[in-house]
Length: 391
Image 1 (cartoon, helix red, strand yellow):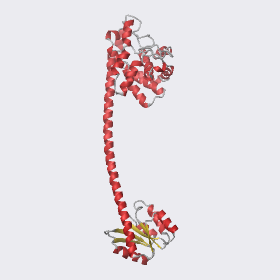
Image 2 (cartoon, helix red, strand yellow):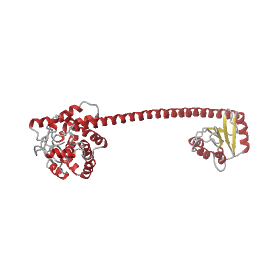
Image 3 (tube, one colour):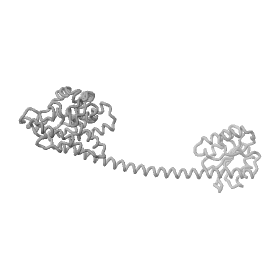
Image 4 (tube, one colour):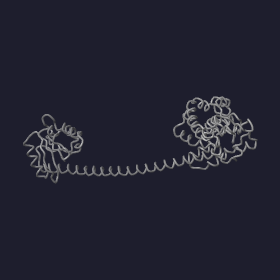
């Protein structure tokens, strides 16, 4: 079978004389012809190179209706035009044929002119459908190409965003380190506080995004210490009233340093810096807020900060044991600390101990002990009360 100008047609009819007549007429019309003597052979002969099927209705073994149904269910050839060659005249049979997907009908006996008109019309429909399909394929290809380009652009943007965010986080971390660098006796304090805050946040059910913000922002809680004179910040003895007032300004200084940023991390860090020394009962500073008027992240950081201050060495004291620190903090339940947050922290002491071990201060411990042994006063350099103040 050779491809011709008009296309290739499959003729399926159980009568050889009819097949021969149909073959001669279709060849006169310029079609290549493939013959099949029944529905089973017709399905075997059908392939993607067939452009149209002329199909008898009444055949032994498998009717034209059944062949039509099989064709419409077969991938690759399901759209081929099917013209029924039939003597059926009942509307019910024709409606059934249309429901199955028949393209057109030609009545027996077949007349050449009608055959030409109906087959040409079916082929024009096929050519139009093929053109639409090709156009859709081209459009789909173009869409895939553009989608891939857009996806690549988004990937590049995501990489750039991740790099920017990583640089921002690193900058913030270094800013936090700068604030602690003045207080060389607590080199790992900021990292531990960040981890403790995250533990508390997870325990009370904060979502992943909020936990990430808390982890990144809380280490900046004491950035305002950059504005506190060293002779006050590192004083080994008890602070007088004026000195204590100056130290307390590290909260507002920190908020000023961090304020006015479009960065969500810095916005949260500003809130924490300003509020992490507020007390649940309103006895803290700088704004004497109480209860839930204190921002949640500030309340969380208050618990984490005080625990780390109590269990860390300072110029004015040896580190307390975790047990001693917990005992002291229990005294602040409902006064300094929100009970819910304190309980959340105390319920995960196994994780707290792991963090303390992994992020313990190493380099300055000997120096701190020496300073502690020679401090002029047993009273601590505390900002409010020796037992329950932050780092």
